[in-house]
Length: 170
Image 1 (cartoon, rainbow, N blue to C red):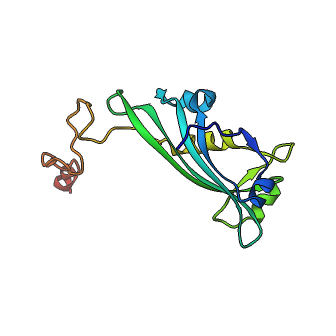
Image 2: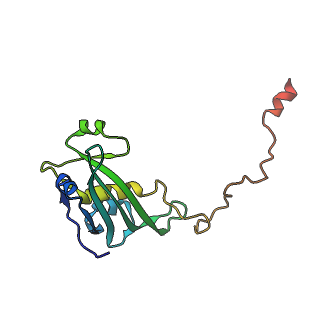
Image 3: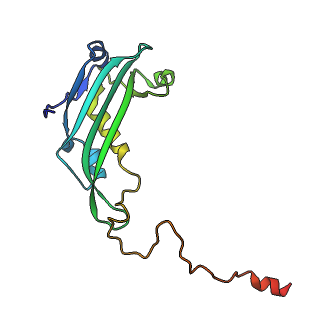
């Protein structure tokens, strides 16, 4: 894939009529919200878009993307590289009420005042949603110094029941 810069905004209706397909990159340095959520990032995110009209006559923006970001492990506080993969299907709407009429397999995206969709913000939102809620290494790769056991309880939990004293009083 060539490293072509994608347009920031595009008219989805004209693009869907032409059945436009485009591949390219967005610079991650321009995605401030994503940069705030990550420790480090690579230079760019690779994205592909397809604009089409489905059998219901709805305009559909679908695509995929990937980017490598550095996240802080919540177990050991070390940085690790995580690959973010996104896959999306949107249908543009003029206002929030139009989103209620869409089938459940499409997400709604609102048009701006010029009737266009901001592709860079769309990709940035999807990448932020792809970040794990609690980022962490795999247990075998983590440097956390703890004596926790994963998946099994230790056998030393044979403590006496504190209510046994009440049985004696009865």
